[in-house]
Image 1 (tube, rainbow, N blue to C red):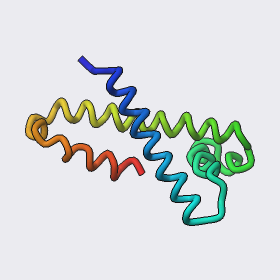
Image 2 (image 1 turned 135 degrees about the vertical axis):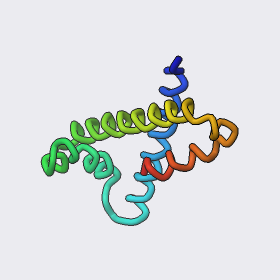
Image 3 (image 1 turned 120 degrees about the vertical axis):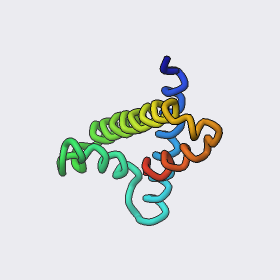
Length: 102
C-alpha cells in the first residue's frame, strides 16, 4: 500500500527546500528577481513566452515544480520499497533525491 499522505508531505518538503535553495542562489549569484526561477521552469512548457507572462507564468512554474518534485518523491518511495538491501541504510536513498532534484 502506498502511503499517500507521507508522499504528499515529503513532496511539499522536498519541493519547498529545493525552491528555497534555487531562489537564494539566484538572489546571491545575480541581480535578477526570484520570479525568474519559476518562469524558467514554466518555460519548459511555454517556451520564451514564460519570461514575459508575468505572475501567471510564475504560478505555472510553481505548479510544475511541485509536480516534478512529486514524481521524484513517488519514484523514490516505490524504489525504496523494492530494494531490500537499502532498507537499513535510509540515507543512501536520500542522497540521490537531493542530487537529482536540483
